[in-house]
Each structure stands twice: as C-alpha cells, then as structure tokens.
Image (cartoon, rainbow, N blue to C red):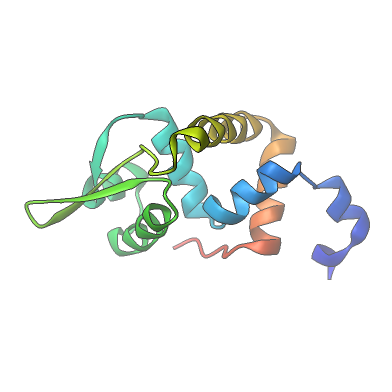
Length: 133
C-alpha cells in the first residue's frame, strides 16, 4: 500500500512539533476545518448549530469533533441556556499557550500551499480518522 512507502513517508514528513500537533488536534478533515475556522475567528463564541451552518456540516458530527478538541484543551466548552458553546481559548498552561498558538499559526500557514495541504491530507489519511461526513 502506498501509505507505507518509506520514500513517500519521508517526502511528506513534518517536523516533530507539527507531527505531534496534528496527531493531537488535527486527526480528521473536520478538525482541520475547525482549527482553521477558529484561527480565523479568535475570541468568538460559537454554538454547534451556528458552526454547522457556517461550515455546512452535520451538527452531530461537529459536536463530537468539538468535544474532542475541548477534551484536548484546544477549545473551551461552556453551556449556555442548555446549548454548548465553544471558544478558541486553550485551557493549556500559560507557558504552553504561546507554543500552541505558534503551532496553530504554522499549521494555517502550511495549509496555504499546495504542498502543505498535500502533507496534511497524507498525515490524516495515514494516521488519523479521515471520516468526512
């Protein structure tokens, strides 16, 4: 299978911090989209249904992915009037917040190039859960 080809793996490699970032936070195509969206809208509180409309994704699928990102400390999750809301404000320790913020910026920058997007797609297909719906 081509995903196990050592030559392709080294070509599509990323540095260790980015590999760890992706393994933890961007292990699906939906999380890729969410990380980019929250980066573009910092300090904005979103309800699941609002995100579902904005991203044209099923609310239940987004809810699972959002909860995982919140469990990993990437997002803050709050309940307001019995509805879940999410904010891109990590719950990491202050020393790690700057590090995570830099990784998010690097990831978004990486995704702006064709080669970068191919690397992200490769990593999600190889290591993640590439369910699209």
